[in-house]
Length: 180
Image 1 (cartoon, helix red, strand yellow):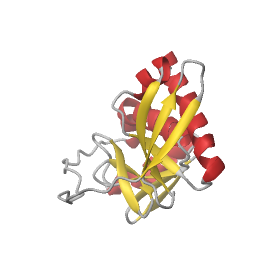
Image 2 (image 1 turned 30 degrees about the vertical axis):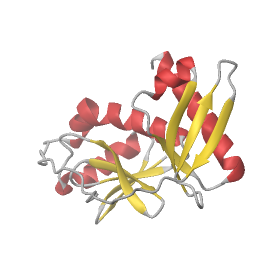
Image 3 (image 1 turned 135 degrees about the vertical axis):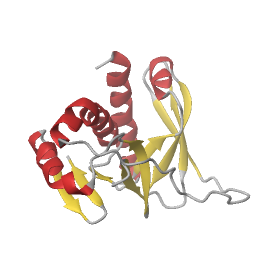
Image 4 (image 1 turned 90 degrees about the horizontal axis):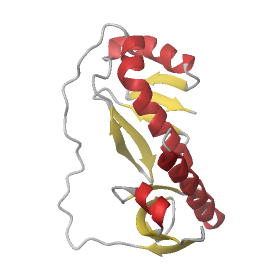
């Protein structure tokens, strides 16, 4: 794992601990495109927070001495023109879920689980279209897309594969619930 990724996970854990000292049920996500740069050189970056009454964002300032400061924000749009639907991707069906997982799924899921865990999440849902979603507040938000995600007929075998890799997995009508 690159040093930048390890450093970012450490910073993520510190931010989670900082936020949870005031809001025990909070989770969050970076709004920055390259939060690794912020972790390496310091500065101010924006995060989206969930489970925090009256706030939906925060500005996080990392200084050169390793200090963290947090300014809570509430952002209210002037207009709402988003429809909230993710783009559709055709579902490609592999023959063997184990092979799909080894070639495509493992790397994406390991990085995603590491990142989500560092920000206070403990589970995600893998939907039939390949979207890996987490609950943030009262809604599911896609975090990654798994290309070539196995069709529903392969899910019982995929659950076994995920459990063999140390994850807890359960097939549901809406997708596969993965916990760690």
